[in-house]
Length: 281
Figure 1 (cartoon, rainbow, N blue to C red):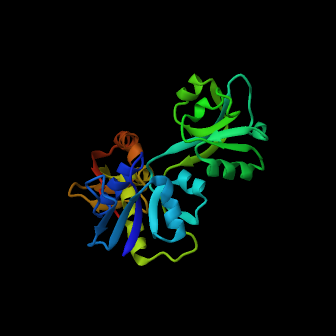
Figure 2 (figure 1 turned 30 degrees about the vertical axis):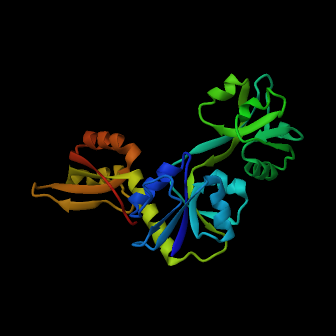
Figure 3 (figure 1 turned 90 degrees about the vertical axis):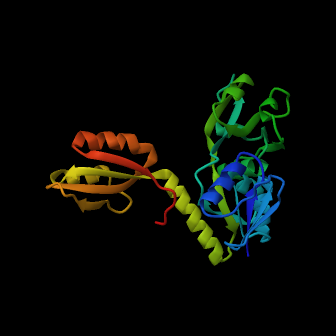
């Protein structure tokens, strides 16, 4: 039976459970449950701290898990990302006192406070920079004012909290993170895990795209298909109305209204949008 780790709490937990449900797997209904067995799909789900999941997967105790890319890198576990899930996004940045113009090279020899020491060490090593890492579990932005650190490395969204602490962002992002499926490094992926990956990929794709149907005069089909090329090619069907055809194509959800406007301006009519609940491509 396949053993999969799922975040038990935090920002990734609810979305991880939701995507697994959409992929056809049973999930716990009581947040106190630590294990759930889905006999229909031959999967055991273990609900663990997101920060620990990469360690369990890397040790081989579990075949796969859902965690954050940041937590995977921070753990230095023997596990690799095999699928990104398009939720739980976050960006890691360096920040320092706003009264000075900082560059990444200025970090050398400084104290860097962070809740993700492994991630920061990995990033600095890639830049050839040596610094003292100060590990904190929270309120990292206060560390500079309290004299514990010279620079911080933390998750940044709007930057308001940093500005309130007298800090400003500098340098390129350390990492752009999101929820990912991970598996143990250098091991053969079992058939059951391949199925789970295909199912999750189908849900991710279905969330990104919609089906767009519209009618268009035959003489405008080429221009219309340039607007809606689909993933491989649009489906074109004849209509009873002479010299008109029906076109169906997948388009990115975020571009739907713009595409509809362009098609209407071209001469398309009967433009309809349909959600995709799952797919295999």
